[in-house]
Length: 285
Image (cartoon, rainbow, N blue to C red; front, side, top):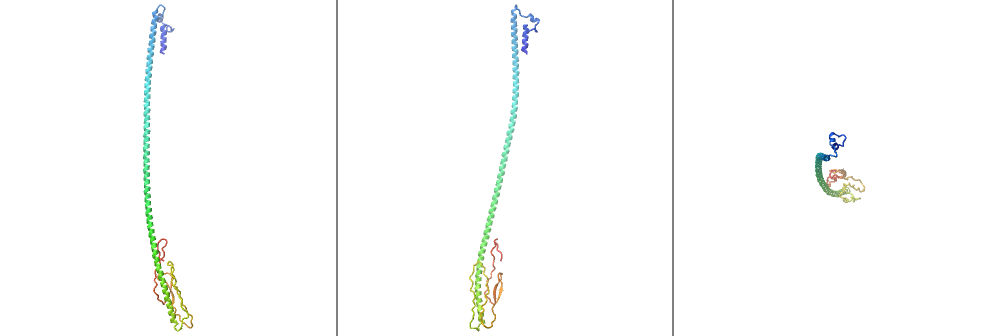
């Protein structure tokens, strides 16, 4: 805009512009007779050009200064914005780091607490298992001792009972032999007393021999009554045979035959004991 004004001014000064024609310009129009006037015009043009150049320099400096100021302002604003963004980023990063550290600390705390709980549970389980195992061993040992004592008691009682039964069997065998011998002697004496007037006895009294002792574990049967052999002779006779009665043993059991009128030696009587039951206890028969 200023360059255009300057050009117009030059045209006015030189008198070439139709709008800028004045009386002064007319008067100052160069003529062939004034050579210095061209020099003045040239000097004026040079001065005007220098003014224009100086003005252009000033404007350029001003524009440059304004541009530099604007650039510095923009740079300051950009730097300030960058600092603000950096501060915000640092703040966000710090918060993220703090959150991460807090999460890591909390995770480590939870892991340690879980480990402590697991160790406590394992320790409690081991202690309980050891206690249960100790109780089981103690109970097993007590049961073994009880079973051993019961076995010893049963075996000892069986041995004692076996010896007792063996003694009873031997006593019964002795009593049977003695009883049979006395019975035979009594029968023979009675027969002699009955038949004193006869020269001889037709029949002999046959008594069965004593049975062989049975196995110690089997019970011995009581002696059966032996009927007297009646000889076949003529003439009347008296029935003076001993009376046979059934008498039960003093401690119970099967009744046995006893000849009333005879007084044999007393037979030892002992109470029989039943075998121990499966549970290990003894019950009276």
